[in-house]
Image 1 (cartoon, rainbow, N blue to C red):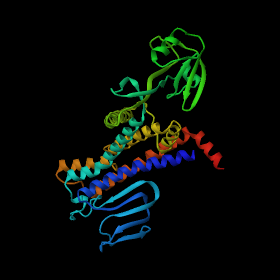
Image 2 (image 1 turned 60 degrees about the vertical axis):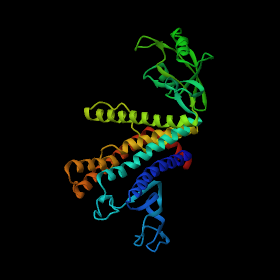
Image 3 (image 1 turned 180 degrees about the vertical axis):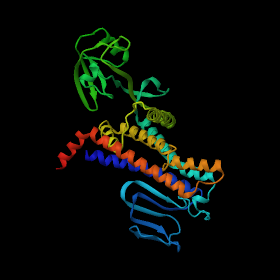
Image 4 (image 1 turned 90 degrees about the vertical axis):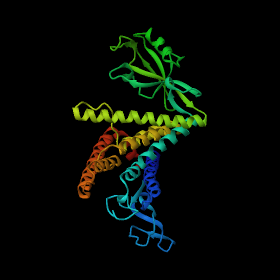
Length: 386
């Protein structure tokens, strides 16, 4: 569990840091001053900067620096990602040439969008590297030129109140053999099961590094009248490509995943407004940390794939048109363009503060939900500590 927490912090720090790096690099490209760029969140532990006399100087602690000619590069006490302080980001210093507030709307939009773009680029890089080494993937949509290894039959859904659920099968498990006979395709599995309704069968299951043998009795299923145990399966394998093709596959997969995640969030918001039960599970920091531990146990390529998906999620959430997020700030720029003048600074600040408070409230609610959901894991951790 301790290793899981450390890996989770490192992973989250990388994703947040590259996000802030996107804002920093783009701001500097357009000549906007970045007053401070640091690893971790304030308060500042130490920093280095170039003075007005063009000499590098150190600064300890969070005291103000009056003689900086550029950016303070800092190391901060909270080791979670990074942050960048851009001159004029709150609308101040409008008369200064190197202030964000003094830039054309399109430049401000690009700078505010750069963090999201960096998260998408990071995801594409992770996936490209993964495809060079070999990533787990469904085999029904594999591009030409792929090399496929470790073919297996993976469970992608377990129906509620089914024999499979009663036996303890989980999404992600792989069906290796049935009554000692290896199965590699859906047709093989379906053919063996359909002829044995009511007969107890021994399923050989692989779950991570563990192999299980479970006795399950197929029955006539209510949906479609077929014989089965209540699972949906997909033929999967470790798919790799030559490096030049892996780069394109990484970019393509990032775009496809981004679209699916956007659609999923739209459906969640729609369900909230119309009062329907939310179909998707929402997880906060605690839930993501637990999932990180589960993925770590599967191996490096699974971790790489999970990091890419998490990076895409951060990008999509951050670009939602909600106050306090990058997307919300871009929305205010669009309003400024349409109105011909900016929304008053105090009004925008109040709206962003309210949005931030609502986001923090949501994080707290989801975190409490995760703590109760994974309470057994926390009890195990506390027992090890005390």
